[in-house]
Length: 405
Ligand SMILES: [Zn+2]
Image (cartoon, rainbow, N blue to C red; front, side):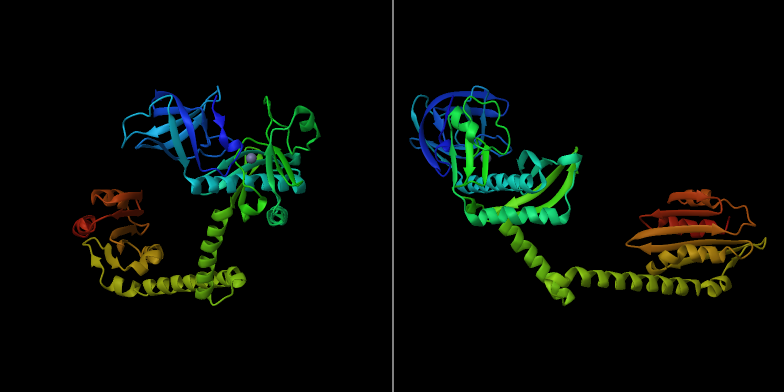
């Protein structure tokens, strides 16, 4: 069993200990000490990283895990220093404080958020997951609900931030069994020999073996990002502390830029954007109608220049522009209203050749087979086939072969 020094002082970032034993598994080599400030992965909080020093030797600690016997194992990066620490000797350790402080902000903030969800929505919080960027909790709500409305979420967030501003002192202790019974824990403690209680003033009491800040004010800010149903529960994604302030700065910058582009104040951006998108959709519709008209205006010229087969059939070959592409089908429809007519249409967009081969109903030419014979990808019905090619060869082949149709 390793003594967990972070229980006594979560703000300690360096310590000394005695090396006890090593082990090796598929992940690498692990070292156990008689005591440590390195937090092992647990309760949804990732492990601490840092370094260990012995004499003039140094090792990076890249992972920390506790085993079933409560021994805390430090996995060492041996890529730069392959020798192992001497056993039964003193060793000095330091954790990466920025990483730990970030985890403490997310973890402490989670307690506050879970407390507010419990107070205002009678939600029972299960697991915490501190992700690389975003953290989440899963909440069981009354009557099997998996969502809360925006107003309720805003109230929860506001209460959580008031708790932060109240700057309640945070004290963690191992009360006697007698004292434990008197503490109004937010949720039932697990089955431990000694229960550790984290108290935030008289606002929050919870059994927890994690690392906490000294006062709620150090959380700085809690921001709920979103909620979504997850296996009958409500999953709440949130940010605390530096992560929340960095997120605020990022969103402020993005929204300010959007406001500049739309000549609108931040709060007017959604409405202005909605209006702009509607204008854009109207303009797109008008443009499409215009392209369709322009494309169909080509019909008389195309018919005039049609190739005449000896048996009286006519062949229209047309290379269209990118703008004609949406109206290509309408053009094929108009042309094939003519009697005994075959239309081979091609429009190039972004280097891709798009084909539409169609014919009048009074013919029996199989244009689907013909399209495939050009080696273009596609197919369709005998009277109406579509295809595409990445180069011009199928189109060149179609133009040559069409006179023999
Ligand atoms: Zn905790």
